[in-house]
Length: 282
Image 1 (cartoon, rainbow, N blue to C red):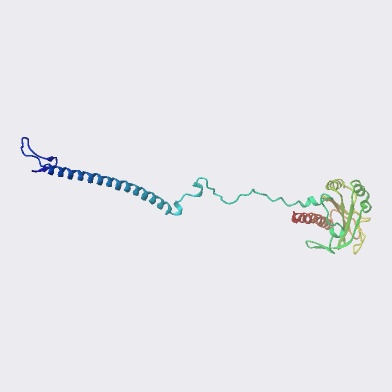
Image 2 (tube, rainbow, N blue to C red; image 1 turned 90 degrees about the horizontal axis):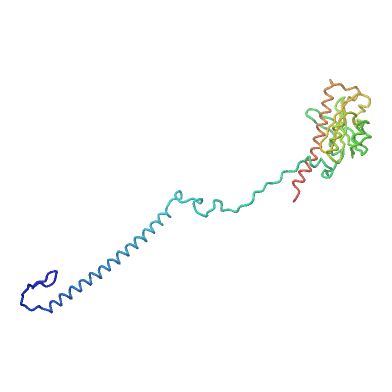
C-alpha cells in the first residue's frame, strides 16, 4: 500500500482489510512531527523576540556610546542644559567704594579743621622758591586781635565777621617786600563775606629778620582772597618806600607769587586731613 500526503489511499470497493497497526503508527508519526514543528516554531518565535530585544539593547547602547564619544564642540553648551547656570560661582551684590573726602570740607569749618595751625605751619622754611624767584622769609607773627594789625577799614570788617586769629609773614627779594596775612574764621561763609566786602584797607606790613620797614607811608599794592574758612591778603611794595604804580609789574608778580603760595598752603592742610581721614581704620 502506498501513503501519500493526505493519508492512506485506497479505492472504493477495495475488499482488503486495513492494516490498523500500520495506520496507527503512521498517525503517531505524523502527530510527533506536528509537535516538533510547533515546538520548533515556538523556539523560533522565542529566538525572534530575543533578537528584537537584543537589537533594541544594542541600538540603545550604540546611541549612548555615540553620544559619549562626540567631540566637545558637538556637545550641548551649559546654557542649553535646562536648569544649568552659566555662572556657577557665588554671586555678591556690587559695591561701590565711597568717594574720597573733599579736602575743602576740612578747611571750611573749625569743627573739622583740627590740624595744628600757626605762622610756622602756614609759612614753613627760611626761603620760598617760586619758579626762578627765591624769596627770603623775614619775621612772622600771629594775634587774636585781628584789627590791630590791619588798616582801619579792613580791621572793622574782620571784627564784624568775628576773625579768630590773623597770622602774618614777610618775604623780600631785592628791593621788593611783601607781607602776607591770613585771617582765620570759624566758617567759610564768614571768610567769603570778608573777601567780597574788602575794598579798602591793607594788612600792616611786618618788618624784621632781614626785611626793612616798607609800605608805611608809600602807596602799595594789596590783594584779597578767601579759601575755606581762611581769608588771605598781601601787601607789596618797595623797601625804599617808593609808591607802586601799575607799571611796576615786578611788584605785581611778587604779590601774586605769595598769594598763590598761601592758597597752596591752605589747600595742603585740607589734603593732609582728607588723606588721614580716608586711611583711618573704620
